[in-house]
Amino acid sequence: PSTRRPFTDAEIKALFSSPLFTGCKSKHRRYQPGELIIRDAKFWVPIIGYYTGMRLGEIIQLHVSDLVLDTEIPHFDLNEKSTAGDPKHIKTVAGIRTVPLHPDLLKLGIAELVAERRKWNRSSKRLFSEIPLGADGQASTEFSKLFARMMDKAGLGDPALTFH
Image (cartoon, rainbow, N blue to C red; front, side, top):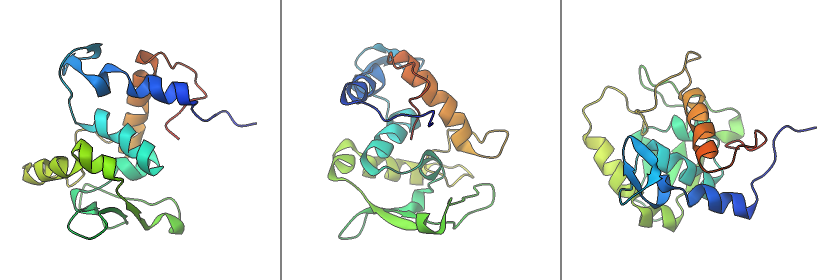
C-alpha cells in the first residue's frame, strides 16, 4: 500500500490560498496574512510543480539557463548539463525532456524571475540557489522539509500528502 495520496481540490485550494501565495506580513512572517507576495523558491517551486507535474528534484536543480523563454513555445529544458557546484541528475532517461511553460506561469512573472536571477552575482547557476544543498548533496531534501512546514501552516498536516 502506498503511503502517499493525491491532493483533493479543497487541499490544493487550501495550499494556494495561504499567505505565501496571497500576501504575507514580511519575509520572516510568511504565514501571517499581509500585503507582500515574495516570489522566491517558496512561492515558485509549488506553483511550477502544480502547473507542470515536474518532480521536486527536477524543479530545485533547474539552472537559470534551463528556462528557454525566447522561443515560440517557452519551456523548461530538463537536462543533466551541470556546472561545478551545481550538479544535476535526472532520475530516468525519459526524464530528459522539455516541458512547456503554462501561460499562467508567464502571467505570474516567471520571466521576470529569470531576468532577476541572471543578474545575481552568485557562483551557483541554479534558479533557486537560495535553497541550500542538503547533507546528501540534494537541494530537494531541504525543500522537502520546507514544503512539509508549508503544508502544516496551511492546515494540511496529513503525512500522506507530499510534493508528488
